[in-house]
Image (cartoon, rainbow, N blue to C red; front, top):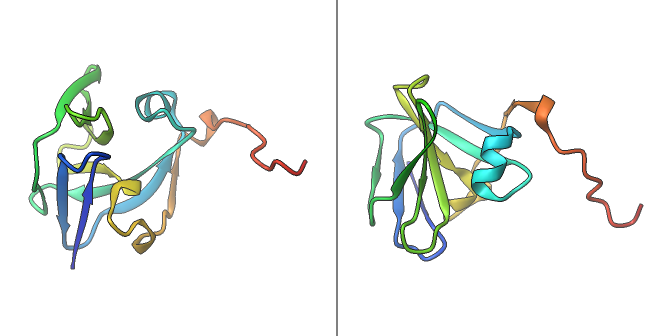
Length: 122
C-alpha cells in the first residue's frame, strides 16, 4: 500500500510505501510556528520506504539537529526530521491525498497545547 501527498501548489510531492511507524499530533511551540497551526499531525515513516516524487523541498534548521522542510514555491510546510530520530522522517498527515486514511494514535507535547475554546456556541 502506498500513500501519496503534496504541498499546496503540488510542486513538492511524496510517496510513502509500507507501514508507518506511528501517526501522532504534536502541540509543541516549534511545530505550531512552523506550520502556522494550533497543532500538527505527523506520519513517522521509516527511511528507505518513502521518496520525493516532485520537487525536493527546501530545508530550514529550526534548532540544532532539527530540520523543517517546506516548498520553495508556495512555502507550505511539508515535513520534519531530527538527528534524534535518524531512521525515520515525519510527514504532515494533512498533505495526504486521502488524509482520512490514517488516524492519529499518539500525542506529543500535550503540555504545550493551546487552550483555545474552539466551540463557537459557548
